[in-house]
Amino acid sequence: MTNSKRMWHYLVIFLLLILLVLSFPFELVIAPERKFRITDSNGNAISDALVRQRWDQYALNVHGEIDLKSNLRGEVFLPRRAVRTNLMALIFGGIKEFKDLGIHASVGSSEGIAIFVSGLPHKWIYDGKGLETGTVIMKKEQ
Image (tube, rainbow, N blue to C red; front, side, top):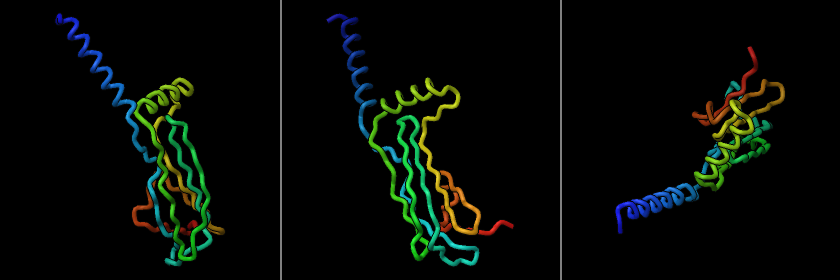
Protein backbone atom coordinates (compact mmCIF):
# COMPACT_ATOMS: atom_id res chain seq x y z
CA MET A 1 0.00 0.00 0.00
CA THR A 2 1.38 3.38 -0.95
CA ASN A 3 1.79 6.26 1.46
CA SER A 4 -0.96 8.30 -0.20
CA LYS A 5 -3.48 5.44 0.12
CA ARG A 6 -2.47 4.92 3.76
CA MET A 7 -2.94 8.65 4.49
CA TRP A 8 -6.34 8.51 2.78
CA HIS A 9 -7.37 5.60 5.05
CA TYR A 10 -6.20 7.49 8.17
CA LEU A 11 -8.14 10.57 7.05
CA VAL A 12 -11.34 8.55 6.55
CA ILE A 13 -10.93 6.90 9.97
CA PHE A 14 -10.29 10.30 11.58
CA LEU A 15 -13.41 11.80 9.96
CA LEU A 16 -15.52 8.83 11.04
CA LEU A 17 -14.28 9.24 14.63
CA ILE A 18 -15.19 12.94 14.57
CA LEU A 19 -18.65 12.07 13.24
CA LEU A 20 -19.07 9.47 16.00
CA VAL A 21 -18.10 11.99 18.71
CA LEU A 22 -20.45 14.64 17.29
CA SER A 23 -23.40 12.23 17.22
CA PHE A 24 -22.82 10.69 20.69
CA PRO A 25 -25.93 11.43 22.80
CA PHE A 26 -25.76 13.11 26.19
CA GLU A 27 -28.13 14.84 28.60
CA LEU A 28 -28.06 18.63 28.54
CA VAL A 29 -29.41 20.30 31.70
CA ILE A 30 -31.40 23.40 30.84
CA ALA A 31 -32.46 24.22 34.42
CA PRO A 32 -31.25 22.31 37.49
CA GLU A 33 -33.55 21.14 40.27
CA ARG A 34 -34.33 24.00 42.63
CA LYS A 35 -35.84 24.00 46.11
CA PHE A 36 -36.28 27.25 48.01
CA ARG A 37 -38.45 28.94 50.60
CA ILE A 38 -40.34 32.21 50.19
CA THR A 39 -40.65 34.47 53.25
CA ASP A 40 -41.60 38.02 54.08
CA SER A 41 -39.10 40.45 55.58
CA ASN A 42 -39.93 39.14 59.10
CA GLY A 43 -39.08 35.54 58.15
CA ASN A 44 -42.71 34.35 57.99
CA ALA A 45 -43.45 31.80 55.28
CA ILE A 46 -45.55 32.99 52.36
CA SER A 47 -47.89 30.16 51.41
CA ASP A 48 -49.81 31.80 48.58
CA ALA A 49 -46.93 32.82 46.30
CA LEU A 50 -47.30 32.07 42.60
CA VAL A 51 -44.01 30.91 41.10
CA ARG A 52 -43.55 30.82 37.32
CA GLN A 53 -40.53 29.05 35.87
CA ARG A 54 -39.58 29.43 32.21
CA TRP A 55 -36.73 27.56 30.58
CA ASP A 56 -35.25 27.81 27.08
CA GLN A 57 -32.57 26.05 25.06
CA TYR A 58 -32.28 28.23 22.00
CA ALA A 59 -30.12 26.10 19.68
CA LEU A 60 -32.49 23.13 20.09
CA ASN A 61 -35.63 25.30 20.08
CA VAL A 62 -36.80 23.77 23.39
CA HIS A 63 -38.99 25.97 25.58
CA GLY A 64 -41.21 25.35 28.56
CA GLU A 65 -43.11 27.10 31.32
CA ILE A 66 -44.87 26.02 34.50
CA ASP A 67 -46.78 27.80 37.26
CA LEU A 68 -46.65 26.51 40.85
CA LYS A 69 -47.82 27.69 44.26
CA SER A 70 -45.69 27.66 47.40
CA ASN A 71 -46.83 25.20 50.08
CA LEU A 72 -47.91 26.08 53.65
CA ARG A 73 -44.26 26.33 54.72
CA GLY A 74 -43.50 28.70 51.82
CA GLU A 75 -41.48 26.03 50.02
CA VAL A 76 -41.29 25.60 46.27
CA PHE A 77 -39.75 22.66 44.40
CA LEU A 78 -38.84 23.04 40.73
CA PRO A 79 -37.77 19.80 39.05
CA ARG A 80 -34.73 19.49 36.84
CA ARG A 81 -35.28 20.34 33.16
CA ALA A 82 -33.05 18.42 30.76
CA VAL A 83 -33.05 17.16 27.18
CA ARG A 84 -31.15 14.40 25.37
CA THR A 85 -29.12 15.74 22.47
CA ASN A 86 -25.74 15.54 20.76
CA LEU A 87 -23.11 18.04 19.63
CA MET A 88 -24.21 17.84 16.01
CA ALA A 89 -27.76 18.94 16.90
CA LEU A 90 -26.38 21.82 18.98
CA ILE A 91 -24.05 22.95 16.19
CA PHE A 92 -26.69 22.79 13.45
CA GLY A 93 -29.28 24.40 15.76
CA GLY A 94 -26.85 27.24 16.50
CA ILE A 95 -26.17 27.74 12.79
CA LYS A 96 -29.93 27.87 12.12
CA GLU A 97 -30.40 30.43 14.94
CA PHE A 98 -27.69 32.69 13.47
CA LYS A 99 -29.13 32.26 9.98
CA ASP A 100 -32.63 33.18 11.17
CA LEU A 101 -31.82 35.93 13.70
CA GLY A 102 -28.34 37.16 12.85
CA ILE A 103 -26.71 39.18 15.60
CA HIS A 104 -29.73 38.66 17.90
CA ALA A 105 -29.35 34.87 17.94
CA SER A 106 -28.78 32.96 21.14
CA VAL A 107 -27.63 29.36 21.35
CA GLY A 108 -27.36 28.62 25.07
CA SER A 109 -29.77 27.71 27.83
CA SER A 110 -31.55 30.09 30.17
CA GLU A 111 -34.00 29.91 33.03
CA GLY A 112 -36.19 32.58 34.55
CA ILE A 113 -38.20 32.38 37.74
CA ALA A 114 -40.85 34.96 38.61
CA ILE A 115 -42.42 35.17 42.07
CA PHE A 116 -45.75 36.91 42.50
CA VAL A 117 -47.20 37.71 45.95
CA SER A 118 -50.33 39.78 46.39
CA GLY A 119 -49.51 43.23 47.78
CA LEU A 120 -45.74 42.92 47.21
CA PRO A 121 -43.55 43.77 44.21
CA HIS A 122 -42.77 40.88 41.87
CA LYS A 123 -39.35 39.27 42.12
CA TRP A 124 -37.42 37.99 39.10
CA ILE A 125 -34.58 35.46 39.30
CA TYR A 126 -32.45 34.59 36.28
CA ASP A 127 -30.40 31.38 36.02
CA GLY A 128 -30.63 30.80 39.78
CA LYS A 129 -28.87 34.02 40.79
CA GLY A 130 -30.37 34.94 44.17
CA LEU A 131 -31.26 31.40 45.26
CA GLU A 132 -27.87 30.60 46.82
CA THR A 133 -29.22 30.79 50.40
CA GLY A 134 -32.33 28.74 49.63
CA THR A 135 -34.59 31.57 50.79
CA VAL A 136 -36.23 34.35 48.81
CA ILE A 137 -37.29 37.31 50.92
CA MET A 138 -40.17 39.33 49.53
CA LYS A 139 -40.11 42.97 50.71
CA LYS A 140 -42.30 45.98 50.24
CA GLU A 141 -40.74 48.70 48.12
CA GLN A 142 -39.14 51.44 50.20
